[in-house]
Amino acid sequence: MRIAVLSDVHSNWHALEACLDHARSQGAQAFAFLGDLVGYGAYPAQVVERIMALANDGALVIQGNHDALAVSPPTALTHVGDHGAAWTHAQLSPAQRAWLAGLSLTVQQGPLLLVHASAERPERWRYVTDSLAAQHSLDAASAQWPEVRYLLGGHVHQQTLYYRGADKRLMSFAPQAQVPIPVPAHRQWLATVGSVGQPRDGRTEAMYALLDLGRAHLHFFRVAYDVAAAAAAIRASGLPPFFADRLERGQ
Image 1 (spheres, rainbow, N blue to C red):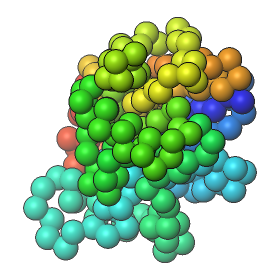
Image 2: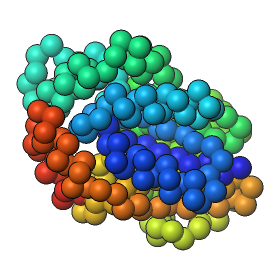
Image 3: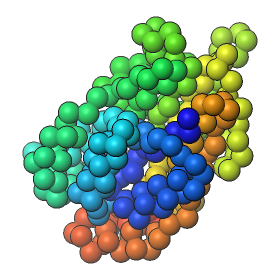
Image 4: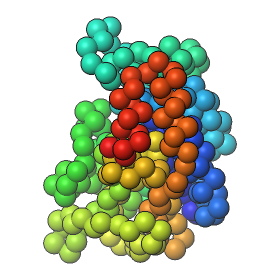
């Protein structure tokens, strides 16, 4: 089974479609979405509708912090993110908002656990940015689901792989895009799969990962898409132009 794992789409229709097409070209047989379907981008309704259809076909989908914020935006719009959440809320239909609100914070299926941020108190949206945070997340997952071998998350907009060594501590590994990484199930692994819709490593290409459970391989991919069109749509929508600026800078 080859599972394409996508996170942090952030209403970027162009990036989403490019990643879906690429994943299918790589033999993806299933899809998993790790939250933050919306926020920042100009196409929240289209992205949610697309992923709802994929969920009806069996895709796994969990909730991210921006999804929760779009369902219930703050009444006092004090910073740019609040304005974006309020705009996104208005673009979504009641049925789409209800679907986002009903998404789980985690999904466990066999050796897989999906979470947007950390498995340690997932509702707190803690960032997994180093080996210590990764260890806390994997320890929390193992305590509840001992069979989990692959903990997959997003939230940090970076592609990183951690594994538990012989001394039980977690070590980090910087993956190289397009290069298959052996991830044998006798170890435990935690991957942050990066962001489809808003990379923040100085590059503009969309990010996703492909987990091949049969071969125990994990591929991290970067996918080119029409960044200029996505940025132009943001500027034409009435969203804060800052969202388009950072998309073009990959930050």
